[in-house]
Amino acid sequence: MRSDSVKKGIDHAPHRALFNALGVTREELDRPLVGIVSSYNEIVPGHMNIDKIVDAVKLGVAMAGGTPFVFPAIAVCDGIAMGHQGMKYSLVTRDLIADSTEAMALAHQFDALVMVPNCDKNVPGLLMAAARLNIPTIFVSGGPMLAGCVKGQKTSLSSMFEAVGAHAAGKMTDEEVEEYENKACPTCGSCSGMYTANSMNCLTEAIGMALKGNGTIPAVYSERIKLAKLAGMKIMELLEKDIRPRDILTKEAFVNALTVDMALGCSTNTMLHLPAIAHEAGIELNIDIANEISARTPNLCHLAPAGHTYIEDLNEAGGVYAVMNELSKKGLLNLDLITATGKTVGENIAGCVNRNPEVIRPIDNPYSQTGGIAVLKGNLAPDTAVVKRSAVAQQMLKHEGPARVFDSEEDAIVAIKGGKIKPGDVIVIRYEGPKGGPGMREMLNPTSAIMGMGLGSSVALITDGRFSGATRGACIGHVSPEAAVGGNIALVEEGDIIQIDIENNSLNFVVSDEELARRRANWKPRQPKITTGYLSRYVAMVTGGNRGAILEVPDRKN
Image (cartoon, rainbow, N blue to C red; front, side):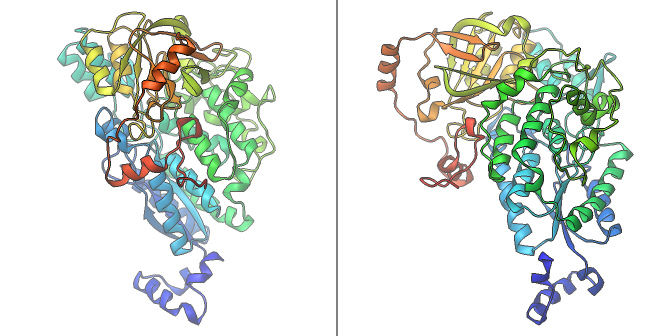
């Protein structure tokens, strides 16, 4: 066992003395040591219940003959961090989580790991760590929040943000906003729509690193506790069979995950996280293939914010496996891949029927014949840009309008709420990319303000930052190269005509080559906004959004 290096032989008597200080018996030391990475904290609603999940995992591990040890991982609530400097510290935690988990796992020589994440960057960060470490690992999330209910209608956090925009437009009273405030988020768990946390928890299940129900069983259901016990037991089987993350996280598994992504209509943030996880597994995942996969993958779900169904509804309809079973009917998945269940994808999804064709459309009656995400290119985004196509109004799939240019999220919000944005405008928010932000902030506040003010079907927003999974509308993010490194988005001027054609995957602005060259000659790099602390180190190492904002040592690839 890996752990023998800290517990066997006379040379390791000092190590055993320290285990003795922990109250560990000789019988426990004879068993495999299983690290349980707990993302529990008291500030993230999706994590406040994780202590119960962790306790259940510990029990499962012990029942199956392992010795569990819990250690922590940090997590940021993107909702609480939204709209202020705190959002600069969201994406960047993904790498802190991966690095700290690597440090703890190797320092203590665990034989296997159970990851217990839930909200946004916590899931990809721990998946990155799992791929990097490559010791037997399984995931069990904290589970999604139940939807809220306002005036007899289910609702969620995205409606709450949009209510603020409606209030600014005079369409909603203080009392009505307060009702949303009190009812939109009624339980613990990751926010109830197909936002980033639930997207990544569903894709963890789809890619094979978690058991059935990981992405969809509500946080407050007893079934979630049972799942955690089963995960604790299953890790001992994976250890015995020596099934490791890189056995599961193959190129074909990532293609499967992208296919499920398209069918579910997941958050655009998956286009950052999947390449970053793949990179840690030694696979270079070019997101350009997303369009190829989208072209053959029907969109089967319109979960919030794209529609009015929620993760709890997806769970009742059969969950991720039911979606995968629908996709398998047209041969869209590789069914032979090994998973954390110890079985293949095909064995996992056999018999998982679609119990609600209104929540999961049958494969022959999809919402659309193409997937939920599109990757765009053009002179405004020479590398790539990303949009959640399934959440865009039909009339905005092709749009042309004048640029309204802002060099920060805050300036854009002032203009939107001040009534300075008109139907047809294309808002450009730049210097919010991985380096320019720094940290690539989510733009949920401006996109929600646009929706709340009734401009969602006539105004587009383009940024080198990113969007919350709760964002809907013609919102195009991850524009690469970003403004901070001299990308063409830095050269857009007020009034330039911007041409958006999502159906043909293009994003351009109308400017001659000569004029573009003149603007480039006059462009000057900006001084970094932050020059101290973690963010200053992050700026020095982070790559573009088109590569998943992975970190590289300057002048040397990892």
